[in-house]
Amino acid sequence: QVQLVESGGGLVQAGGSLRLSCAASGRTFSSYSMGWFRQAPGKEREFVAAISWSTYYADSVKGRFTISRDNAKNTVYLQMNTLKPEDTAVYYCAADRRPASTLDSGYDYWGQGTQVTVSS
Image: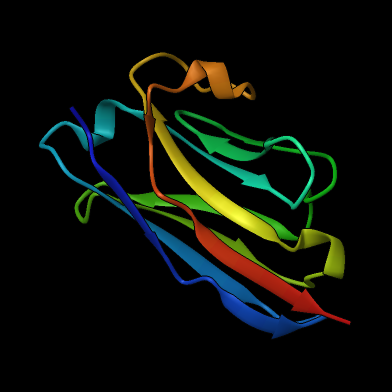
């Protein structure tokens, strides 16, 4: 079992930056693929970024967002730069022992989400 807790969300102006963190429980964090997803009001949850041995990004965030992990701290990060109003959503952290996936069905463990709001 893995428990995930996101933090770092908030309100930011367009063009600004935020860094999300996701702290994971457990002693085998390094063996998990980690992903970030987001869900805007009235929309389906969508893939943002994932990390295992490589990193993967949605086209909509490529070049603006960076996913990274610190296995010593059991934490995965999502650095978000040049934020746009369309980035407004609840951001979820996800984990799984399988290879990184861009599908939410590829992750068994999920955090509770953190709200990111980008004002224009």
